[in-house]
Length: 251
Image 1 (cartoon, rainbow, N blue to C red):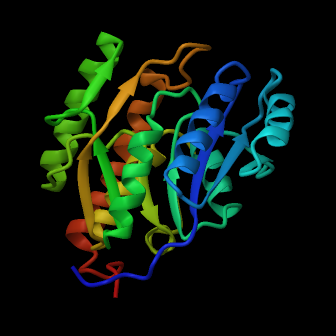
Image 2: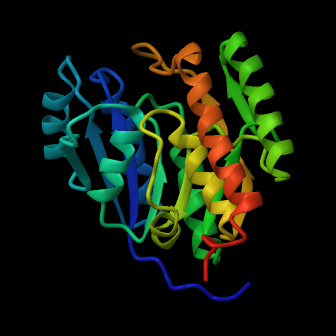
């Protein structure tokens, strides 16, 4: 593999809406594991219009964890995708990992992503559905829909990744800059980012990861609301893949 520029800072981007109960353990686990692994990092948590005490909790946590960078989405509109884009725009790392506020993603897996990026990969993608992967307490209906959606994406784009819809992925900053502008304002950003990266010719590696259901609060993803939005983004990137004649591929 051709040597890539050494990485200096890993930005953890976490969108948070009404996550006052989940954030303390999530932030503590990331900080503890990254510090023990010697990973230079910042934890950028985006308060996306919370109506509970999320912002106050973040201010308190900031006094305990010096790498925490709380920010509020001031883009003028809320939404999972908008919050992530706000976090990307307000993070400093030359590598970024997107994680959930509810502690469903393992910081140990995020540390593995950092090592994979430092091996020279442009992207580090995890899968919960390969040998060594694990899901704990996944709602059955969502699991069924997830597997169908990911199968269709894998076939439509002819890619080996079977967990495209999972937000928990890591990218070099050069990849994210090369995938702009971002179109998806909601959870469909989770497929826009990896599909654009793959279609535009960035390298990636896949590793098994684990996922566990949240302990506090309720999930924000509403399947009925997101179906058409996922389809739109997939169709958009599919058209780029097969009809743009490589105009947007990395040079």
